[in-house]
Length: 328
Image 1 (cartoon, rainbow, N blue to C red):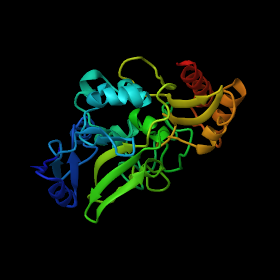
Image 2: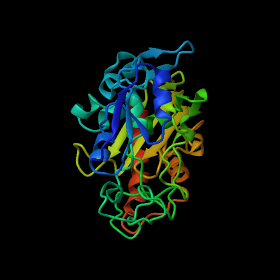
Image 3: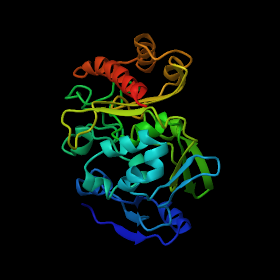
Image 4: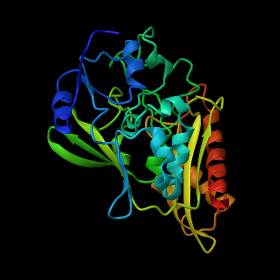
């Protein structure tokens, strides 16, 4: 680990000011950033501790939606009565992520900013990683790429986003509140993470110095029919090969609204509104679920060792929707 300065921010404004300095990084729970710094993957000049800022509240918004402060611990969000009752898809995704010990430390804001779990990114012994060293190449393309992207990849990077929470947030059409040197703004969740293109070192659309302050969800329509399915190599502490966040609003035997997103398949949580529309207005059936999967996986381009993900994703979509639809 290279030497760095450390400063605990006493206010959001101070955090933003400090975070705008060259080489500064925000430190919340530290469950990802500390590992990256210890391994020499990132080399912050300044760590700005934001863990004690007043950003740890969970509350219903005036419009009936949900406000989750960026400093809320994942375990607290998963166990909150309002989340469990009104947004069960979110609670399920949080519980599926990591171990209980990590959930007790990790924050909601930090979860949005997780870096990929690509082994070629994490191991500095591999020289060719455009995410870690822009312009150096991508060893994963010709390497062991079983875990990697089948959607939205580029010749520069085939890494996948690791978060479970973010898949549910994408499906539920969340927005992210941020504060930066130019003030406050909101970002639609679909626009928060970016595809790699020719700049995979940039995971999000955040500007320098911008701090995530909260995540907000619209009023829930999916209290009764929601399921988060995570397919992985082992049941404990493993990242998804494929995950599905599925939720339905049913009325008179037909789908009135649907929320659907994939994880483990792209550089960002993968939501295609056309996949949800393939379900709306129809009874939930094998045909409608297949149509939704087709829309989600349109343009899939597997790597040399992960072609199985296409079939796995199709089956996972159908399974998640079926379980969601069966719930009372």
